[in-house]
Image (cartoon, rainbow, N blue to C red):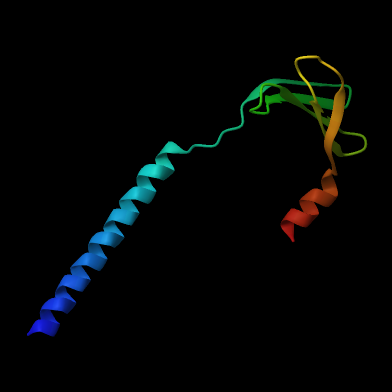
Length: 102
């Protein structure tokens, strides 16, 4: 009789914990909504320029060159001094998409 009662209490505890974790995951997933907000987008003469905030007080400039199929990301190392723009990353788009598909 004692084993049956312990098993029932164990099952109830296990199910209650599972429901609690599920509810916690659902609540927390609703709070975190990652977004990328484009501040400005311009396209002309084979170039597309897009700016976004980097989350640290400055912005990133994304440049797409249609002729070379390159995506280049620029940042400002010290936005308070406006020192200089630096290349943060660069990708050859056909290669990047090919890697993503495979």
